[in-house]
Length: 323
Ligand SMILES: Nc1ncnc2c1ncn2[C@@H]1O[C@H](COP(=O)(O)OP(=O)(O)O)[C@@H](O)[C@H]1O
Ligand SMILES: [Mg+2]
Image: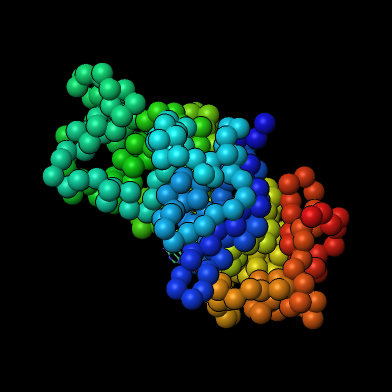
């Protein structure tokens, strides 16, 4: 059984007068200990999908359809109480500024202990401290951080604390949404390398969400490329990011010249995301695609299978078609 099976998920923001289709028929399967990157430019629906998995979408303005099967349970429609049982223990998350959710007036350790006691109500102060030191060691932090206030930490230290918190109960899956984006490149690189080691040691699965392909290249074995709410290409990182087949993936890689180690000008992809409140009959990337033909504007491409796990939703790629 897969650890996470996302099937035909649609997520809509219900706005006044129009609906925004932020995730459009998303399908993803993850096995235990998989490391999966979700990459795509800002506005492509990555965070919406993460919030959908975590049960954190604002229920008054969103609707979600499909199935998100995590360890055999469909998370869609799960009650708040049942989500609370999963959160931290089975499923945890690190966001760009996770530490903002901590109170500035209490020491880091005190707040860590409070989270620990959600699932371990009888833990003593010294047990909590031991737990904290142990976690800090895993993420390369000094035990002194336990008695520091959040504002005393640098950005890198704060994100390390957030990662430590996410590991507290050995979750089966950690979702990192732009978790290192705000850091300088050196700190980001250090933390990403440590994450890979941690993931192997802790035997957990991870989803790393980022707009930066080089982050996926350093941390993830598999990758999903999202554009305008749809998955356009997915597969093993060393295939998809080395010999990308979808014109969007190709464009994305050209926007990150450092990934190929070449010094070339930043080319990017001309144009911008389509209006997600309009129904797009064809390929979502067609309006920006340098190779688009008539059919691309009219018909939605189904996935072409290029090998085990490698799928591309593009009419111009040859291979076996699979719905
Ligand atoms: N709270 C919200 N209300 C309305 N629209 C939203 C909300 N959050 C995100 N969106 C829209 O959903 C789309 C996907 O956004 P998001 O999931 O944040 O993308 P990403 O994380 O890839 O940058 C965008 O068009 C964005 O404007
Ligand atoms: Mg986002």
